[in-house]
Image 1 (spheres, rainbow, N blue to C red):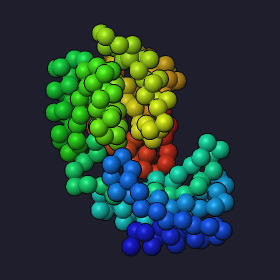
Image 2: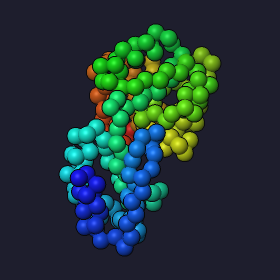
Image 3: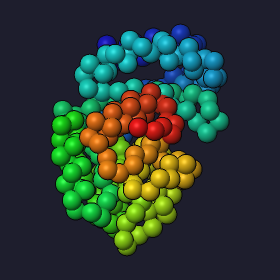
Image 4: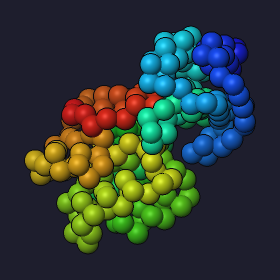
Length: 215
């Protein structure tokens, strides 16, 4: 039903070509619907309104829908992402073992799947196994420049759609946003702020919108 609703919304924009393909995205089943030619900004706004029913149907079954946009800002399709029974996967990168335990406790209440990395090497190994839905990063680590790691993560093509939340004792949100973070939380992090931020970013990501935001 969600697919039919999505096809109806796309067809209303009268594309010359529409392709549907079953693909794996972030190790989860998904359907990618491509259109040609790409939609303009005005048509994309109309499409978002037309996708309201599809978005509600996908959300009801734990999935999400994302409008796919190219570097030129034009819409070239839609992705329907079907979630597993477990929640979104979060990768936490922090060299403080106490903080890692704290994050795991916070995230358990939101039914998130959590992977922890105490170094850049551990983070790389974790990313080779599975792509997370979102990354939490501490930029103040002993053996690695966290700011440099943030840049590396942000510039990695496979992580283009993965929001990064910087959590730090430093008061440098502007620098974090400039280097690629989508949100900034100052330590000590409050559970409610963290969960609200993750929920907001994941919701924006599913709609094809990622912009820097505070707690």
